[in-house]
Length: 427
Ligand code: SAJ
Image (cartoon, rainbow, N blue to C red):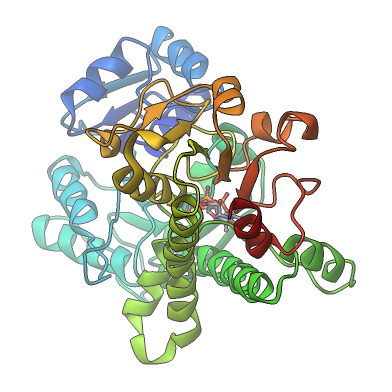
């Protein structure tokens, strides 16, 4: 067997399929027997562009199988979740559990790669755990350049949902070895299917690189979100301000929204903060600014709806970002749920990428409606996600609506001094 991939989620399954397509016989491992059965039948349990066809193909050709327990192989990739706990401390228990599961089948010469986003030092923890469980094998140690029986490396995934199969191949990869030998060995593995550059470093630096990338984006989105509140208070259109400021050759501000969602950008900065709380003030504050933006939007929306006692109000979008069906950590979902709980059947939910409503709406009375129904029946609209299908609605179909646009989706919508004028018209 060429490779074992631990975890068949959003990253693990596409990764396993791409490795298999390169001709490497691959076994995907998941704790969930339903996921294993789905993959073995050539189907997929997650939505990602082109993934179904790819999995169907490699399973059909016998290159990819799934199981709940690993078998001996040359390369082991750990791609399991690393959530954080309520106190924002990272939880690496799934990573360590995966390492424990593969330890018994490891043999001399095997390569173990951690891909899960992890706090700095986790790859070394994996190495120590394996050393403890397999005293018969020599495990590479930090700073050691000598040969060992195993090769251990950290290589973060950096793919964007919706473009995973493209970015798995085309993105540059950062490969951090526990030792330089480990990095070189892992590089040889990735070279089989990566077209981007493979850049080697040590495991701790590679772990930090991943956290830094998502923190960079979070801090920059926080800047945009902070500007959006300041501008709204001043009665200025923040999107116009950003568009014009971005005409400066060295300014590139991101877009404000109802908060930051997904399972990466809203999570990873906390791993950096947890590693050095006293010196990560900017990163922590950015997280707090982005989370606070969601509460701010909920407060504004509630005030608007209270001024419209009889109106039906549509929430446009529930996903965590445009043109996908992924609701994980979605600020749009959080806003819509809060409004549905308070206003019940006055709230219409529009999410063209979903067939059914998430359980969060059970018992609220709020209903899923299609976009045309919302445009026909709702007097007010709260734009929460900038799906392309919303963007395409022409002004004459929405000119008479009260619109609270948290994404700057419709620049031509009569806005004047945004919120104040909405309330004035509502009164
Ligand atoms: N967002 C804004 N304003 C913006 C850009 C994004 O509010 O200008 C919001 C989105 O609406 C969304 C959230 O940020 O709620 C995150 O969306 P995203 O598209 O920026 O990123 P993700 O979470 O889908 O994927 C990120 C990517 N990281 C970076 O771009 C640095 C991806 O490359 C990573 O692989 C992925 O996290 C991951 O798995 O860590």
